[in-house]
Amino acid sequence: MNSHTDLKHICSQCKKDWKPDINDYKKSGGIYKTCSGCRDRQRDYRDNNKDKIKGYWKKYQDNNKDKIKEQKKQYQDNNKDKIKERKKEYYDNNKDKIRERKKEYYDNNKDKIREQRKQYRDNNKDKIREYRKNYKKSNPDIIREQKRRYRDKKKKLKEQL
Ligand SMILES: [Zn+2]
Image (cartoon, rainbow, N blue to C red):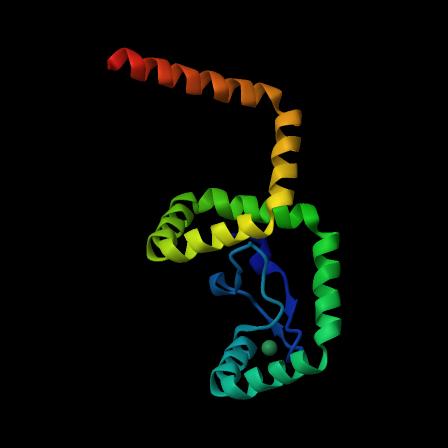
């Protein structure tokens, strides 16, 4: 017997005691704050009022644009490490999917991407030059290694001729 199931729970919605069963456990291991009956009702309500709820939410967003933006920014500022960690985790768990999606996007948008890159380069010549200069300066080993590899490749090509 799991000790959790012996605990009494007060539903935060109807305030009744209820005994959670296996369906009342979240994936994270916690237990829902509301009983299954209330959750069913909430789900029904959501299903029956999708458009209404969406409308409320949209209106709220329209009326609180600055507030929401500020909250989002604050959350991001306060949770930089957490967000980074989550992104990394997502990436680690979905490497193949992400790679596949990127490739697909690239294949479907080759011309667009090429054009975008060209435009970016044209618009940021100074920035790119500066970046390359800094990169070279701070990564002399990598540059040396690249040059070496390039020379080796050239040499091999010559030998093959
Ligand atoms: Zn309830």
